[in-house]
Length: 135
Image 1 (cartoon, one colour):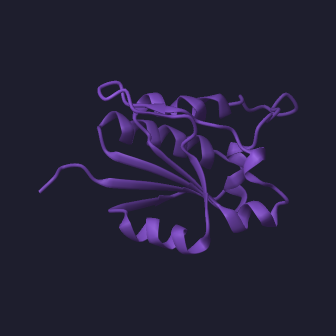
Image 2 (cartoon, rainbow, N blue to C red):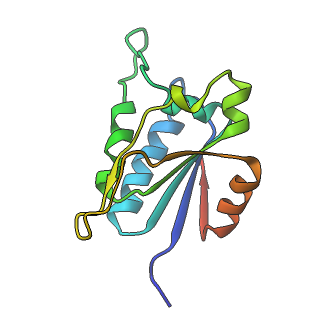
């Protein structure tokens, strides 16, 4: 039996105004550091966490969005965005940041691991996970 678990982090809240998005990101980094299979799902207002050009200058919070771009360096290979949530907010895949991934051992590379998925795929991915953390 493998010690590797499939951890999915479900991000449903806007990136600023609460601590949820920041805490999710911290827990994702911890899971990845312990060599678990980490994936992220962004739904509802959580899709705003990946929108390009976030400006936090009017708030008391630091812009932590650039950290998402480094997740591939920590072994995070899967980031999913719920298509219906994007559409409900007038957004498209073009509005989202890109996150590259590279396997240093095999030299396999992916230019962008952020994937927009439909509701059926969201359900399937969550069901395949050993643990789902909701933020």
